Amino acid sequence: MIAAVVAAPAVLAAAGFTAGGIAVGSIASSLMSAAAVANGGGIAAGSVVAALQAAGLLWVHTGLPVR
Image (tube, rainbow, N blue to C red; front, side, top):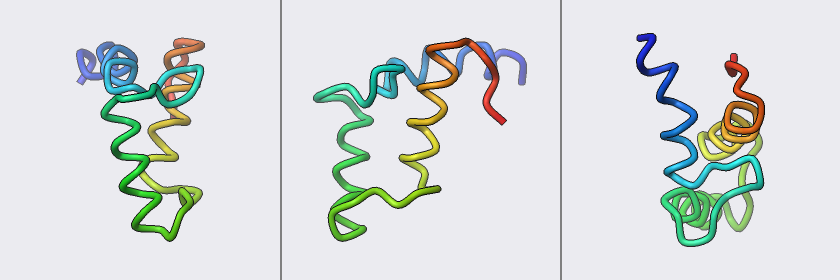
């Protein structure tokens, strides 16, 4: 469990969920595109993509745990 918490920021960043937003050409951008298509063109608040982006912003940028 502790290893997962320690690794999470690196995993989020590697997937493309960064403090600066979703990285172009990343796994995150593919997920965002698929979610937008499925939702009629937008990303729903509270969706998995939105939650991962928030985690990337907070965790990668500040190093703080996301709750």
